[in-house]
Image (cartoon, rainbow, N blue to C red; front, side, top):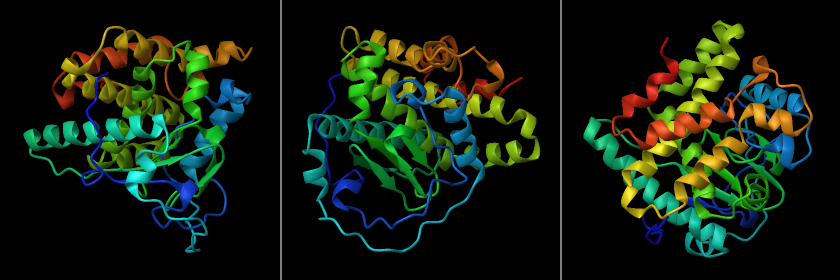
Length: 292
């Protein structure tokens, strides 16, 4: 995808590796958030049931971060965005995502707020509002601090798993997490969390709907920038979506496919959600996963 260059004057970027952003220390994983363990079950050798349990545990707990100070060198946004090819690509994508969604919200007469992108590598991250997590959790979004957290080493694992080294698979990941930000600033996220607490039996079904909607939003961003899409991009995105479907993750890990434990949707559902977004221009189109 032919993304334009990043503009650090217009995006919010920090790095936990270098202490950027003044992040406090947190005591253990836990937060009432939508933490997304995309492929930990296969890539990091975790039991899918344990991964799913971790996601549910993180959603239901609350562990506020303490106010401890940072000990690393503070990096500028420019330094963060030029620290690696992956970082530069992520910053380019963030610039495009911010511009695209700001315009969409303006057309809808809605107030828009940018997220913060936190790029770290090979380790553990401490968030401002959602406790701490290791790289095994995968990319995730924290509603409490409106932060998208990506360990860039995840992209190496994604290339091995999805069988593609193309950029669009990586862009799909960050656009999916950005979709969770859209859910937060539109007020959907807290409503779904309340519904899950009122009806625990429906918690997984609602979580799947959230993930599929985020996939749809990722596709919508790409569709709004169709002029920048290169040959093979869409195939890369669909292949990545298929690789991280719950049924595929469980099957590849030697587990029995258990629909009751799904938290992100099947491979087919994730591909269909991405396609829906690509073909839609109205934000309401992605509400289809909560209908019926």
